[in-house]
Image (cartoon, rainbow, N blue to C red; front, side, top):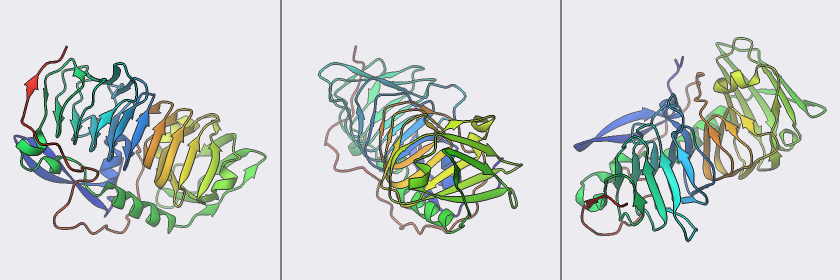
Length: 334
């Protein structure tokens, strides 16, 4: 159960006739989204929970969102993309939103994108809907709906960059490898254990074994800018601890998840993250290419209080650029 509340906040507006602002903490955000990408995102693989993309989303191959009924559903929608949705393919490429989830798109849905809604969730688009769907959609909302931009999360990158820096300032006990195995034996203080490791050393890991020893939260500060393939074959009950672990890649600009995949929340606010094997947890990154599944393991630990991020009085929408003029259309495309 989460007890500590982060000072860092952002605003997300929920649309119920007219936009109404409600403030969420970064801690609460972790409880809503399975993927949080500040910039551009491409995918060939499924996301079990909700997905936020602050830039453009590209369907390299067909993929699904909100595939697990038990995964949290974000208030703004299961698929939230502030920019365009497109595909490089000359044929129909599916993005399917499951379990009644909604789709919210800031700009355009381009041709050859088939946005299917399994459960009759709404499709709301700021620009033009030029793709295909099995569901009625509403587009042109950037013009027709005052405050449409307020329906999107604001200042997400700033919030998580501040969170990452403040977690780094907690320091931590230095970790080392035994051969290529990483053993983490937590000695929590007030439910939290903090460690640190160099990213070059972490890239040598092939096995990891974690003993929480009653810790609600285990934070690993990963120091360094770039890395080779990362991944570790979890031992014993390590997967059971994925909900309580945050890997904080403080300064990394390029993170490649390969080998055996990874588990726990990955916080990499400056990095482009590429996945070759599944992540058992939430991915937070500057941009990402998802080539393997993102599994819903929502962070259940406590985050220590961190510095507040000052937010401007008037918040521009993250990633929402100039939107095409148009009118609201409601139609069904076969």
